Image 1 (cartoon, one colour):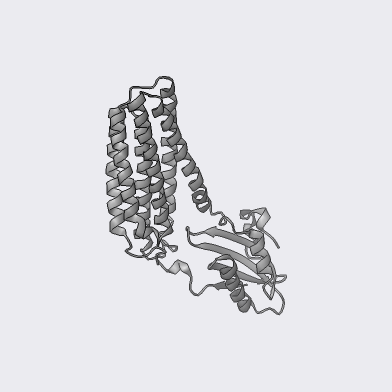
Image 2 (cartoon, rainbow, N blue to C red):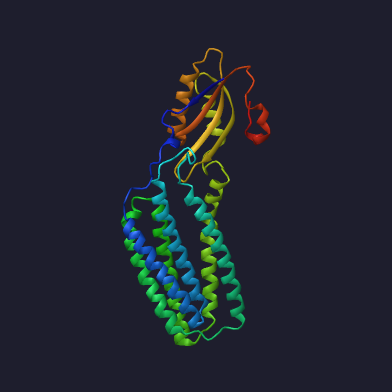
Length: 317
């Protein structure tokens, strides 16, 4: 039984997928400004008795945290891999994002409950203060988006945070409108209605973005990669009779890994077949981190003792 390992294994490298040094200072300034704005909005929300303003502050906090995660991930990704952390530090971003999203779900539920209570007994909200702070938030959201715009063109991670800021600017416009309705017409019910709407928007963002994070944490195959197609493509490589013990998972947002056992024909060139298989995986499926083991037809599989660990549907012989 032969073991074949990729000569340029990604686990041995600590290179970053993010451009080094691009916009770090701008991102740090944006984080500090947004955290200051969050404090001002939440404090102002309590003073004005406006849950919509508090909700906008919480939404703004989520943007600031997204920037913190992006900034931290850029720094951690530059750390070299080590024997103890053989894949590097890029999954720290996934764990932090998961914690952040769970906290946001709790906050959204709390905001929704608060807003529902206020629907039946709307408090006297200070519309002028709400408009002033929401207008300040709008200016800062747009300024933050401008600060990170350059970095967002070169990093998918920062681009997500950039888009969050643009979305938050839209929420601030809605809060300004709500404050205007309260100030001009005394429509106090506008505040809890807006709070509910913002709570739903936050929850929608979280649910949409939590799914890929959960898939990575659960070592699921990348979304959009067809397991059956991978298996058939491996079987089509010259010299390979059958394939089993195929496992695919995401190391991080950018890297996909695969391990598999290939059963070779009696006269097959095993090293040559493995080279062809890896080239095919890289070219057709974007999988450039493959660990492949070969067996001869009729040989016992060395992993038979651990078959119960495999999903029955993916343990093909």
